[in-house]
Image (cartoon, rainbow, N blue to C red; front, top):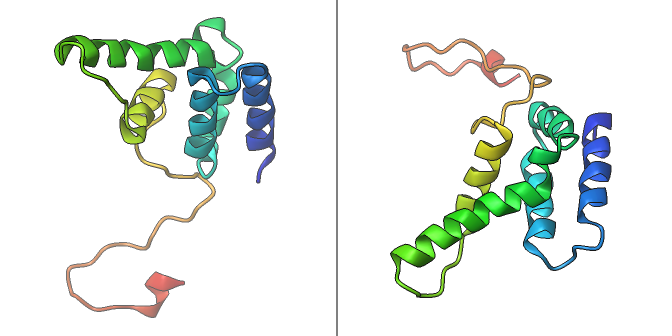
Length: 123
């Protein structure tokens, strides 16, 4: 793992401390998963977590806002925010693009329409 991700883990852990088994803690866990293989996202969130309005607590409040909206819409029925919806809210909150592209990875070779498989494309 790269140094930025390790810094991010420490920063998330500090905001999670004492909040085990809460929505804030779970946002931190999901944020770790989102940033694990995305160095650009890790760098972005690392800077965001220094801002009070971008804390795990504020992000958890955004997810709760969506749950409250659904609760009202469903007129009192029990509501659950599934992980994929929570991930979308977290990504939107922190401005993380949907694609998980690392700048470290090489881009695939040029695409052709000739339906020929070239060994170079896999190297």
